[in-house]
Length: 179
Image (cartoon, rainbow, N blue to C red; front, side, top):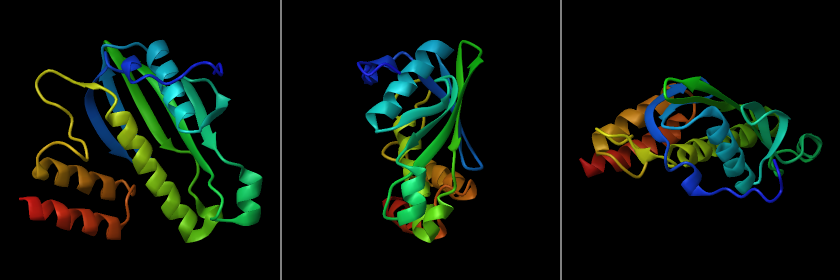
């Protein structure tokens, strides 16, 4: 990606998030009113703004990483190292984005695994909030939607292994208090 390319939220604003499905190690989104080229370049800019570089592949199908593998192996969990696999595919009048972890975090032990899950949750939230609501209903986000909708989303995050049981229980108690 060119150095002068900067992420602009407006790049995503014409895309409408119409579907979210949590999968093992990540999430699949369907966005309407965009095309593969525009969306993947905007996604590349978003990752760059978060400190990631495209390590292999292309913005349409590639791996984004942050940090050094060698230093992570030598120093352990004190060094940040994250990798995410991205696939952007045409889907109707839009795109399907599959975003999954490109590593487990195991080289950093339990702290590394926890950090990787936390980073995945942050990236998923960032991508999800970068669209305009589709007509009919807005996608539930961790800061929007009814408490019941957010509980359903929380269950999906736990089932997909994106958050731990402890994180699930903490967030669940907060949401139940809002009912």
